[in-house]
Image (cartoon, rainbow, N blue to C red; front, top):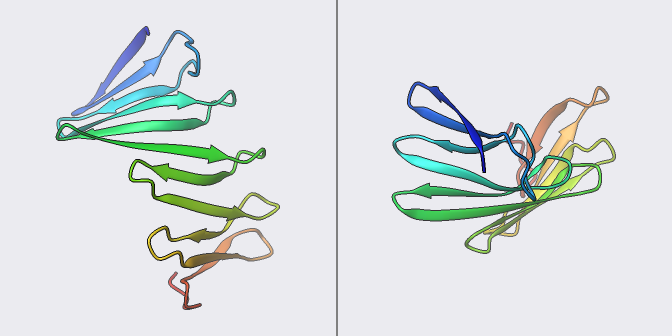
Length: 128
């Protein structure tokens, strides 16, 4: 892989300059600092990141993403096996997400202008 390097303060960004299988030209493929490094390891044909690895203190944490046909994020799968599932409305806005630990649902409400105005926890209590 051929890359261009950019440095901002103590962060290092690496951008893909040659197209490899599963990669997209111009996408950041790695961000690193003195504390951790994140490798963006896979992209779909639309340029959306589908997998990454964060490396902190030598421990690798992997995450994968799944999108619907409209490009909305519908599932995150973490290395631990924990899955975060999102429900989207016809506009592509997230209307709910399921807490992977408690299996409780959090909902997001939108007004007529398609602006989010409220988040409710699993008990129906407004949290934002």
